[in-house]
Length: 199
Ligand code: MN3
Image (cartoon, rainbow, N blue to C red; front, side, top):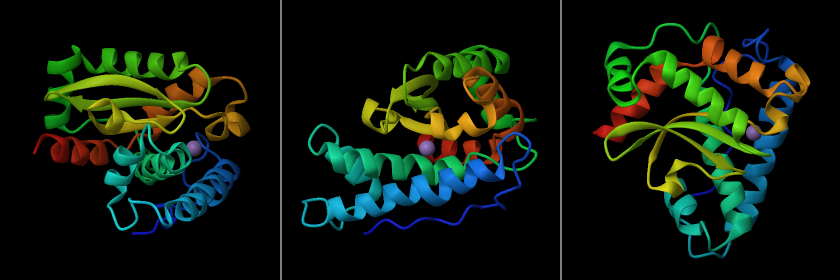
């Protein structure tokens, strides 16, 4: 399969004031598109041509850095757009909330640890909620990596590359992460990925 840039599931200005139209124009229309185009070029002629995106990400990790970086970021961003919605944050669906409390103690503790993971990811990368050995865990990863290459299934990720927040928050990464958790997260999509990860 080749990679294609998905449409955003909302208008570019729909996440304001927490994520601006300008940020999404650069981040989705230019950065994600570059991962798609570079990934398609680097995929040609490799053993992973014709494989699923997840198989390409997992298979190229540690073997083909250029392809992995672009395929990994394509996977991460495909979900990142869906992990957000206008008027996000708020109530977490009951089944997912129970799993979070069982695994991490409380919703507040989950939010605190998730924000801390993003704040302490040195340089570019991602903060994650993932399912590992049947439990929800907080993780972080550098660059285009994800829980997929750490033996886990991602259910929520926040992009902490500067291109994701610098226009709106400048150097205030903690404020961006807090706004993401409180006002942007599409918990229904997180729950859908949790169900898939535990099916
Ligand atoms: Mn990004």
